[in-house]
Image (cartoon, rainbow, N blue to C red; front, side, top):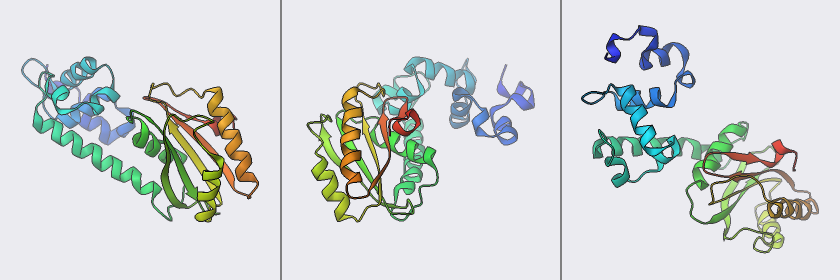
Length: 224
C-alpha cells in the first residue's frame, strides 16, 4: 500500500505539519527527504531499510559517497542533497558560536559541539571564551592529540583567557572511541583548569565530552 493510501494523519508530511517535526520517527523524517520510494518499497519502507543497512542515523549521516550509493535506491543525487542539508544545519548551529552571540540555549551549544567534534579521528580540546554576559568572544581548538592531564597545560589556557579578556569558559573535547563517559583523567583535568582559572576570577561553566551518539555535560553531572 502506497503512502497516498494511508490515513491522512499518518502520512509523514501531514503529520509534520499537524504535530511538528519532533513527533516523527527517524524513518519518517528520512521519507520526507527521500520524497519517493523505489519499486516494492514506499518512501518510509526505503528509509527504514536504509537505516537498518547503516545501523544508525549517525552512521548514515556520516557515510561517504561510496558507502551511501552502495545502498539500494541511494544515488549520487540523494547524497548531494543530503550533504547540502547537513551543511546548512552545520552553518545554522555555527551561528550560535559566533562572536557576540548570547549563549541562552544550552542545547544549541551541545549540538554545535557535537557536530564539531564527533567525527574527529583524534582528540581535540575546544575552549569557548565568553564575556560577563555569556556572549561568545571566540571558540577555538586549543589542543590536539591525546588529551589528558599531561597534555593540556593550565598555563596555556590561562594565557589565552587573559589575552581575550574572558569572563567565563566552556570546555569540550571528544572521545574518538565514541564513548562519552568522563574518565578520572578528564575529571582531574577539569578540576585543575577550573582551579587555575578561579585564581584570575574566570568561571568554568561546563565541560562537554563528545561521543558518537551522546554528549555528557559535567555541569549536569554535578562535576563542575
